[in-house]
Amino acid sequence: MRALALAAQSPIEREPLRLEHRPIPEPGPGEIRVRVAACGVCRTDLHIVEGDLPLVRSPIVPGHQVVGEVEGRGPGAARFAAGERVGIAWLRRTCGACAYCTSARENLCEQAEFTGYHADGGFADYAVVPEAFAYRIPTVFTDAEAAPLLCAGIVGYRALKRSGVPPGGRLGIYGFGASAHVTLQVARARGCEVFVCTRQASHRELARRLGATWAGDIREPMPVKTDGTIVFAPVGDLVPLALRNLARGGTLALAGIYMTPVPALEYERDLFYERSIRSVTANTRADGEELLAEAARIPIRPETTTFPLEEANRALQLLKRGAFAGAGVLLTGASSRVSSPHLL
Image 1 (spheres, rainbow, N blue to C red):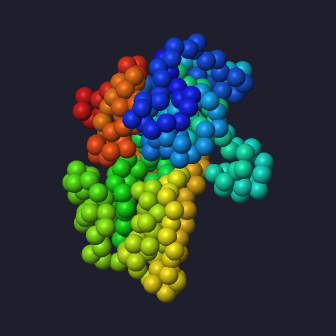
Image 2: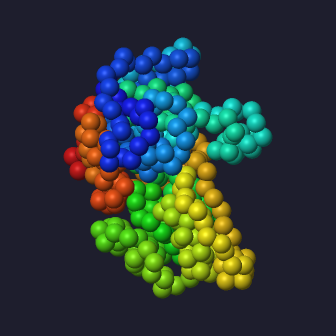
Image 3: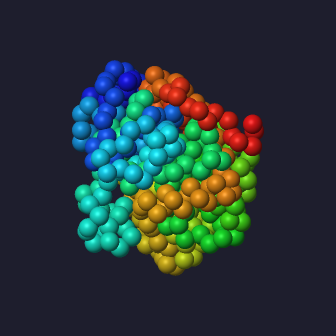
């Protein structure tokens, strides 16, 4: 099979992902083998490739927004039938026994493992995952549409919950990539007004097209105070700016796995009147199931730019530059779902 592997971290412009030909992996006990059709490209992949996150395994195949069909089952694996379409997300394994796992907070498990980080991910023709951490994919989505829901969608969904914005409330968003453009659609379906700050004019245009009440440049003040705000951009300098745009009692959710240093905050200006800050760490499987169900009901329509599997380096280069709006998705050529059912 083909796989794009990272042996040493380097700027993505140097194209550090190398195409390799490997044996097809065998699933172990309780695992399934998935023939990959589509895999989203995520800023977390870029952080791993470029060294913002430590390299915990080398070589590693990135990719953690995987959609494909079950083609093999290891001993004891019976949750999915052969040929069933499934998704693989960032959260790959937890201990299942610690205080976090037994209190619906498995995303905080200290022994958690992640796809494309601790184990090979979906920048390949095949991927293996514990069946307990795979998701059934709603039929309303094509493979390319479903892929970004498996991280961008799930993490954005958790960030929206952490922001505390009620249905019909006002949500602020900083940065408008894959996660934000899915989150905006969920918020709009709940009757929220959404205010977006982002650098790229094409991203602002997409935000308006998806129903944003207002979209401005990243440093522009929002026209109203928001009930909650999410910072998707990995830029610590945005934290005090976002706090100043919060209404009294509002919450700022920081959605990135990595962020540049946050500058000093002033208590009265930035935090007083019960403004609060919450980080977002990965997701629980319950988050994933809830997001996929709500996304199918709406239905969410991810904006995708697709690339052949071999062009993973180029896709990440364009992601870094903000050169496409919405989500980037790698296609292996194995997809059987290239059109939405309502378009057939």
